[in-house]
Image 1 (cartoon, rainbow, N blue to C red):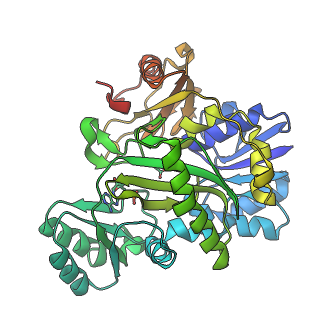
Image 2: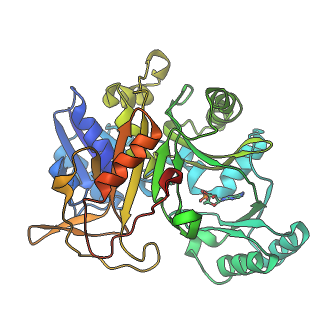
Length: 418
Ligand code: AMP
Ligand code: GLY
């Protein structure tokens, strides 16, 4: 089979590497891909994931048998819908289903309609009622831009003043552009966070091992929110019993509700959960694999990933037994100094060849004058698996330290390591 993966980060690299293990896949393409993915798949750097016409033109000329749409934007824009209209099999939800991620207001109203546990909230398009609500509820309180904002459109405000400023910036200051024209103001929840990814085929839920992302840029969860600086698996506190509870009270009702509303969801449903003193609650749903959760989870998948993708598309997940290695996994992100605020690109990367005990996935790299260089905020994901989490953490750090580029930044405390 010839398979095309859409996207160009560490998540897509992990998907490409997993597809390369499939006995059914003999040709791999990736658009746009990146400098590192190019070693594992034929890349098309000029085809941007959000340029749906360009992607469809590529599909016409390359004729892949299957397309995996990994990032949020093309899913929300309806790439899977377009590919299906062309008669091409594609993994990922339709635009109407992907709205569970693309609109926080839709997601919150949906959860309220279907009794899915989440933080209390109200939605606002006008400033005055938002300010009135914030003053009435008090701090801490959470302000979120409605649309996709690369995981950065959320302000957890410790004071009423900060909350008012965030609401003002989004609704009147144009922060986050169109994504912030409506905002959700919600109750601040407390407790450990968990990423619960599930393969779903419209009706059946098959959970992947749950993991824990580290979203803040610096150690001790300080600094700005990022796309994710590292992940550990398993996620402490998320027992088998919690998983069963979440499937019954969160994932199954979500799938059923979406189907009833004509938004049948096939692909990966990402539950960003908080394990509060009152039980697990949904912080957000995403319509895709997380990044870098994907890099952390997929190395443990034993079943042929192509069989899993097929079952999701065909609605036959119920008949598939998905097998996972019973191991721990740790991902450490090597980022450009200054990420996520200000950073430079183009520094040469050395030492990847010395890494032996971990996978190195490329998040933001390019090849320039025959050299591998940095080309993004998050540059590389170093992932080690081991029988226990402390071993996986030690191994991933030992391997990550072999890699160098100017200004390299990684958190030193992924998984609580000091
Ligand atoms: P999101 O983009 O919705 O995942 O939010 C980014 C981060 O903000 C989450 O990972 C949480 O750490 C935090 N957050 C979002 N919503 C809440 C909430 N209701 N209470 C506390 N923290 C929150
Ligand atoms: N790592 C968080 C996300 O992919 O949304």
